[in-house]
Structures are given as C-alpha cells and as structure tokens.
Amino acid sequence: MFVVTLTYTVPLDKIDLLLPEHIGWLDEQYAAGVILASGRQVPRVGGVLLAQAADRATLEAILATDPFAEAGAASYQVTEFLPTRTVPELAHLGVGPA
Image (cartoon, rainbow, N blue to C red; front, side, top):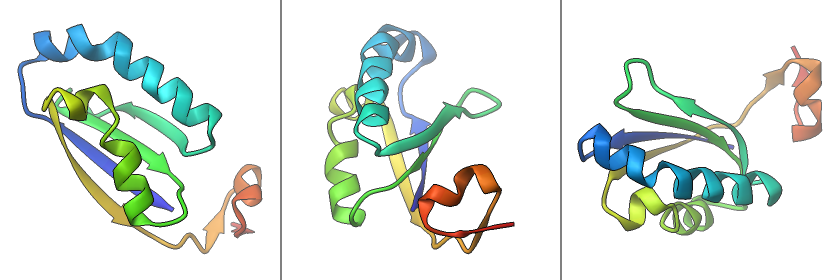
C-alpha cells in the first residue's frame, strides 16, 4: 500500500483549470482499484492519495498519467507502507482489524 503526497507546483488557478481532468483520472483509478482514498491537503497546497498497486514502479507509471503530472502542475512523493492493522471495514485489504 502507498501514501502519495501531491504538492502543487503551479498557482491554484492553473490547478482549478486541470481539476475536471484530474477528477476524471481519479474516477478511472478508483474503478481500477488503485486509489482507495483521495483528498486535498489543508491548507490547499496539494493532495493526498491512499493507493494500492503491484509495486512502486507500477504506481509511479499510473501517477505519471495524472493530468496534474502531465501538465507539470504537481510533484509526487510516494511512501510505501505495510498496514498491519485496520478498521474492520478495510479488512478486505488483507490485514487484520484493529
């Protein structure tokens, strides 16, 4: 599993122009089972994704297709982690409940 932190590298007006395409990309990744959660950072300097993929290289290739990435509008920090506990609602991810 991965936590991805996006940091905007352009002004918010450019981000807002790209947002509909980014949301469409997120919809595709949710449907594919890659993105599990997403949202804005507070303050609004970027976003955070909770993702799953076969490996880091696969995830990085997927992230490269994000319209924010294609436009050079965000940088991405990928942190891999092995969840050992979750709430019961996330047990399907292959780890035990909290």
